[in-house]
Image 1 (cartoon, rainbow, N blue to C red):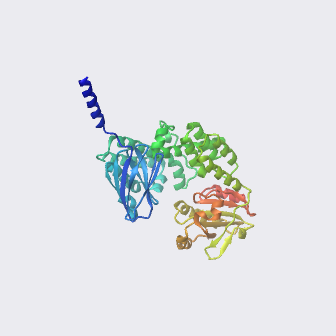
Image 2: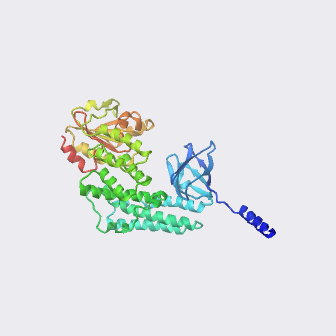
Image 3: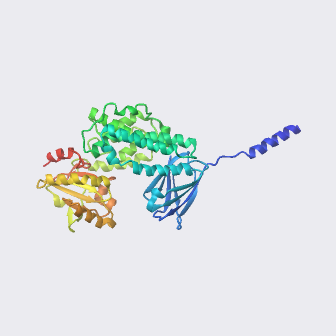
Amino acid sequence: MKNLLLLLVAISLFSCQEEVKPTYTLFNGTVENNNAKAVKIFGNDFDKDLTISENGTFGDTLKIPNDGFYTLRVGRESSPIYLTKGAIVGVTINVKEFDESLIYTGNLSNENNYLAAKYLLSEKGMEIDKMYSLPETDFLVEVNKLNDSYKSLLNATEGASGEFKTEESKELEYAHLNNIENYKDYHRYFAKDNEFEVSKSFYDVLKDVNYSDMKAYNSSKAYKSLLETHFYRIANVVKEKEGISEAMAYLQVINDNIPNGKEKDELMTNYLRYGMKADNSLEEVFTLYKTTNPTSENLPKLTKRYELLKTLTPGKASPTFKYENHKGDETSLADLKGKVVYIDVWATWCGPCKREIPFLKELDKDYHGKNIAFVSISIDEKKNYEAWRTMVTEKELGGYQLMADNDWKSKFVEDYGIKGIPRFLLIDADGNIINSDAPRPSSPEIRKVIDGLI
């Protein structure tokens, strides 16, 4: 009995000394030249704001659900970050040189300083317009070189855990495959060749990818992007084959490939937030979405979007505007009655908007004197008023150049439910909607449409 008691005491002492792995991560740091209220950490179904003090410091415990990749954001700047339960992570940030200034300390310094270096490498090594403008063979050479440079950087990173290197290797592969998935559409855009097609064997490298790995979907940002790009490409094949709308094709492809659950709902919601259009397929698209067991969080949001789009279908009276023009007067939609109106909603800070300018100027020149008015409405903030005036003057922008009165919250912008720019609208001579999401000036389709209207 005495020996048994001694054994029980020994077991008790041993158990008391067992280390219990923490369920949280300690994260702290300093932000110089701060312009934000908080540092945000999000991803993997996690989201937390860490308040930045007056002297630029912050710190808190993060009860992350899983070890893995997250995103760190300060104001408009962001960067990937790797976190594990039990780790102590520190960082210094200078907002004026955000990417160049990130320096991590603590348990995961090697992993996170690698991620910061990787981001800088991506900025130097991949000029999107140049790379995607290349012919197919040259593109594959360059994109493989880029992938090899990332692998070399990872292999040269000392002190990173084996688990991190395994997960990051997968991340690099997913990102590489996503670059390949994007090639056709990006090449058409940057090379200004809307008829471009890749070779029959181009997508062979993607044939063994598992496109229904929901564990990877929830842990890998690159895998999530790969799925969205892949399904979008397949949807456009279905669209052409079956003669249905892009939105309908996309929902069908997701429905056929992803099991019901939050992942399916997220893929559909992310697409429909911008991809649900006020066209003849609107009712059919929304009806299909409702049959896919949407979450109670997303269904009300998309229902609200659907109700708005119903008011913007072809033939409905267009929302109106009356804004200051570049000459200092005001121009309203009513002033243009009797003409077809092609509206460009844009901003001086918007890269894709500026890429459309040469095409819009060509349209304005080629249809000068015809029964069509070209209207550009800037949604720049008031503080950028002079930047807007300067750009209009320097680029010699034609047509009616207007500035909205409250940027994104301007009534005309909200009435059209505009969530992203550039956005183009077509309105008939009586002020009724022809297309609330019209083809861009760079699209060959827009000339066919205009020729059929004037």
